Length: 103
Image 1 (cartoon, rainbow, N blue to C red):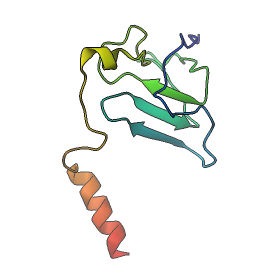
Image 2 (cartoon, one colour; image 1 turned 180 degrees about the vertical axis):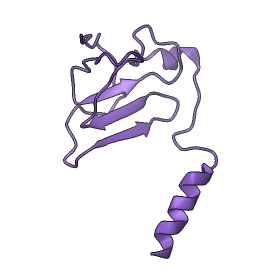
Image 3 (cartoon, rainbow, N blue to C red; image 1 turned 90 degrees about the vertical axis):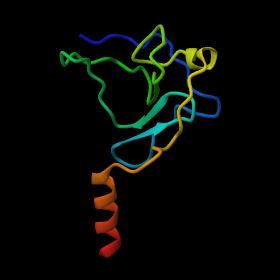
Image 4 (cartoon, helix red, strand yellow; image 1 turned 120 degrees about the horizontal axis):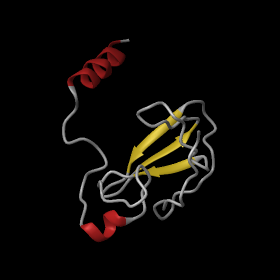
């Protein structure tokens, strides 16, 4: 059973156009949600599919949205703060990056 998207908010300047490349891209927005674009499937912990209703969605990162897992813009009022990029690289990511440089 799928659940319809209850009308999440995309950050200003983010459009709902599909990506031209295969797969999905997930972008953490500074002080905001995770933007998911592309070919993706969203399921709950029991494996039930959640209908995103569009090609680009905003997933809550602050934990305060009233329509989780989607963003409703509450992060703006709650003072949520987080960078777009990690403050330090995860060790596996660093190893993969170094391996690519050596090729």
